[in-house]
Image (cartoon, rainbow, N blue to C red; front, side, top):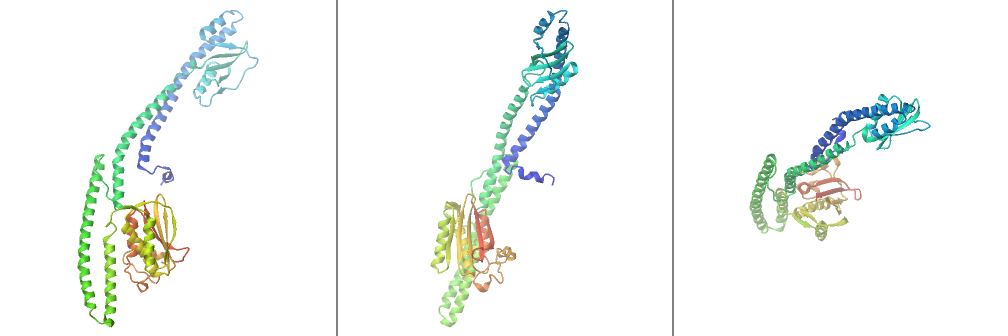
Length: 434
């Protein structure tokens, strides 16, 4: 609950999260070690070097005070200590340093502590130190090299830490990528099988990943075996049921027209119900995936309905390109949607949208539509709704929307039902993922 606000900012992919788990501790460790080293080791080194130079400054100050008695001592002391002195008219009272020079704080503090005559310490120039001294003999500015009061190679540690940290992180990332690759292959194979495609896959990686891969292969084999058995069963059922229906038709043809026509309507209804049941039981995996043009497929469906006298038109197309789909199952789903539209309405319009992520087929009609509270029930098998769409308005068994929803799920998409804003009836969006 506390970290829920942080969730939108976290990486979503497995690679991103694994990289964060790998890199974040390394960076935090370097920061902690660097902070501890700077505050303890370099602080102690800087304090020790500053105390040493402070003693040398006191020696120079003593030579300045004794310049009247022994003027030859000051040049010798300055030369030996590698310092220089100037005599300004006024002294500065403002300490200066570069904003990122944290060791300058320690240098300034120690000089004012061990050399009370110090009025200001100028460290703005990285290579020079200027001490403003208020001496009894007058103001003086003592200058010397910055390297004498702070370590000159302190950056080498940070460079080494960053360099070797980056190298080790890169090596760990390569190893991590090799470990995550079998997981991505398993995910790709699972996603492809969920969309009706069987891609080659061999378990690999760690023991746990191999176990998951082997379980997936066993599951896929059982499902494929079950689908094959179901197909054989449906073929037998279809043959066994169509044979007596054919005999009924032959027997009815011998009757008079007055007695034959009602019975033939019953046989036709049984035939349609049988076809609907077989289509639903056959599922969405009876054909293989092919790369097709969705617009051409939908145009052919619309033309077939137009030849039968239905008022169906292709209203709008947006986008182009070929998509890997199961053409027969997609055709069946769209035909069910258009068939429902013209069964319960006067006209229907179909539109297609193709983009980088999905293909959306929209079927709209001017019929009574489906109330919002009944739309979830409408996609269930054998569902018939009252009063908008019912058995009295046409011949159906309540499987059209259910088959369309199964086809959408098999292609990684969804079937959405809503009210048509243009025509006022039902709007069915069949979204197929790429």
